[in-house]
Length: 295
Image: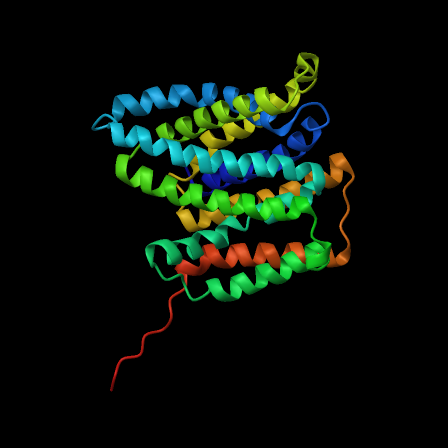
């Protein structure tokens, strides 16, 4: 596959993920966030499951008990981020959720510094300042940030933890599909469990959101994951990350076209600063400071 074709697949995955925010928002008119989260990842799990069988047959060694247990914190962090994001779309705009979710790109190097003492690239600091300014403009100042905006930022922190745990798991096992399946199962268990306890359910309402479940589960959770896995075999990781961050732009586009959301000029300026910050963080590893030899 050519590099151009691989990039096109990654952009398509980003577009599918951007549309998922609209599906999540529409579903909240019928069911609670926990039920939608749990139900959504059932088809996502089933779509990816065949890839898991293929990966298992090709694996050099089986998963150990420790590997299986490591799926629990991975799934819990992923579920926490997903649930918070799902609640957030009720109290803020899809555009806000799309851009603020991308803050996980900044949280990852910060967490690695705090937990693992890995210093971030020198461009992370200006990127963080740009993201802070962008968030300020997007929310109209700290007083203008809604509960949904704050929940989305916390969700981005949870996704940052999930990314770090995913990286450690894949490096230890070489089984990315197993990790994706494991976190989906945890998401289903917690979502359905919390829904059964805290959210009354009308099964006619579930039937009403079948299109949203199909999109968010099969397309966003299944097909887009497959497109990402294929595309990243032919595109370097930093380039792929920048392409996938177009998810936030697609979320804003779909929100404008399908939900009629509109941002103020200050809001669009904030989105621009956020996107520039995320691109800066991803392109940072490609930038090297010049070395000067002693004379």
